[in-house]
Image 1 (cartoon, rainbow, N blue to C red):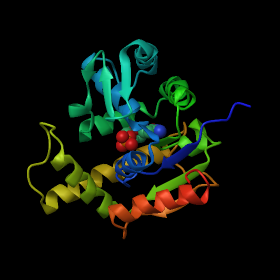
Image 2 (image 1 turned 90 degrees about the horizontal axis):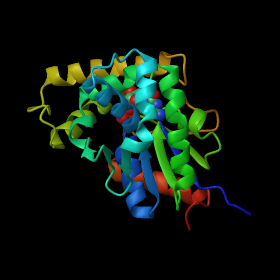
Image 3 (image 1 turned 90 degrees about the vertical axis):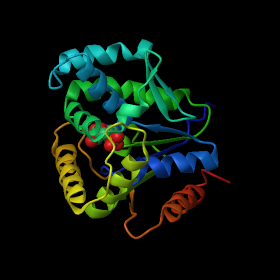
Image 4 (image 1 turned 180 degrees about the vertical axis):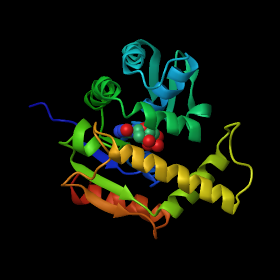
Length: 237
Ligand code: DC
């Protein structure tokens, strides 16, 4: 009998801690991690560089068609490469997140990224943690464990600023200020609205997902919680 691959789906709004938690869970369990947001970010980044209209799903669809030959994801380092160029330095920026959210509204973009995300699961030799907005609802509804991760808007904005300040991005914020926090909260709230109000696969908790509010928890506590949920589901010894 062919055993289907084990999958943990982690969905939730921007800045809820999905990607850092997922990658740490994978480092300690040996599972592999795919941040599906990186695919949407790559479409926005490369689309913009190529001068494509980010509202034109036909030309973005053609770009995604070329991905099977040009885009590569290194699950060990978490880096994504386009034609051998490491996109990581630019892909984490606020602009790239906003462009990703813009292209993610387009049904054809979502449709074309769907088989890429599913094939990642099929081809994996071990369990997979996949994070995004629609993993538990659309990409892989048969996931063994579905977590919907949330946190307050202020906490998410603070984490995002901290994360950006650690990156090597040339556009990283220099100093923390109340204005920066307000700007970041506005930016994230706008992205939440865009991600949850779109018609195609909106950000939404799956009926059978467990909600995990990370607001009052330390990073280590969230990681431990996810690992204990995986053990409860017998996904780990
Ligand atoms: O997780 P992230 O911030 O890197 O995602 C960037 C954008 O991509 C996010 O605003 C919405 C979109 N996205 C999506 O629509 N569906 C996914 N599964 C992952 C991301």
